[in-house]
Each structure stands twice: as structure tokens, then as C-alpha cells.
View 1 (spheres, one colour):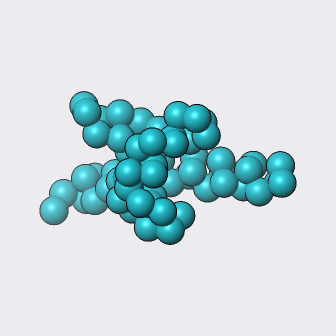
View 2 (cartoon, rainbow, N blue to C red):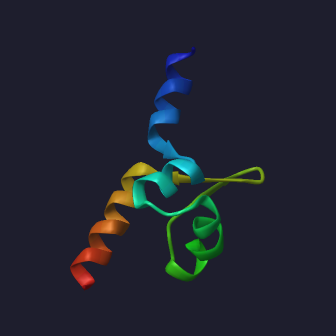
Length: 65
């Protein structure tokens, strides 16, 4: 595998990976990501979530509680 592609794969989470991280279903992510303001990137029709932005978003949400 190309190193640049591997690095890019490490930088982004799929819907399924984010669902596993949050212990919810992939459908829950699809249904709620907009309302929650989860930072996302679209690659064609697919959603991807940048790891660094997700960490930052999670941290800001936990500080707000």
C-alpha cells in the first residue's frame, strides 16, 4: 500500500469506525451527525470524519457539560 494513502486512512474515520468509537450504530451517526454539528468531510457520497477534528469536537462537548 502507498504510504501516503495509509497516512490518509489513519487521519480519517469511517461512519462505522466513529460508531464503534461512540458505541452507537452507524445508522445513528447518519441520523444525528448534522444536528450534533459533528465535523465531517464528504468524499463523493461517503462521509469521513477527521480524527483530529473529532477529538477536538469531543473535548469541546465534554467541557460544555
